[in-house]
Image (cartoon, rainbow, N blue to C red; front, side, top):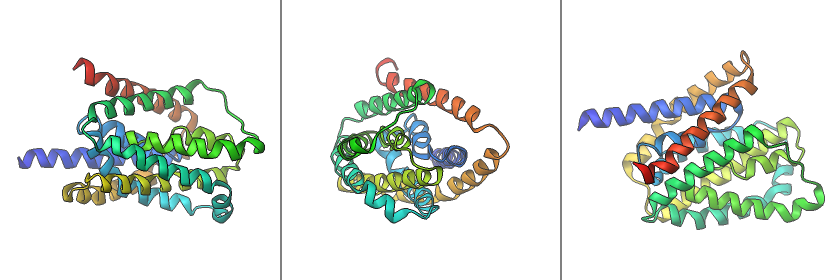
Length: 250
């Protein structure tokens, strides 16, 4: 029993270290990688509860790296509100007995995100459509977050399409991820998904996550981020296919 617990802790620590490296290099991806790896060895709801605290800490730090926080809140508040609504609704599905289908949803989300990152052309959203699209994107992002624990779709490509500066984009992603994390935590708590063991491990995961981010930032200065991102997306696609198909073929 102790060997199993030690192995479980080692896997969790290693997972968040790897996920932190990815976030340090690309500016995102910690929950995606963590959910992808942990979702293969534990239930999606347990994996989602483990990522809450390290995800919040890293995203909160990212949120305040820029100087336009208030302007971004004013511009994106409707999207953030809809993320909360969608996440709370979707979290009911994640915390229900339908974990088989949550795994399929997680795997599908990873594959779709990877395909978009590898082959889709950059999108562009004009200001006149932003008021209409922001709440829709927020609801869809929230629903996917609630069901899978993955924050990226379609928020990331949408924010990239708004034509924000590099610094504002990083800060906007931090805002979206932070709101998603808080909403997911509320949804999981409402569904009774938090347990003392998971909270303890989630706190423990802060350390490898931050160490991974530091290492990832160092690596980013020495290798091509585009090359790393390409292989990272290929890895996510393979992982997503495994998660989606595992429920039916194994």
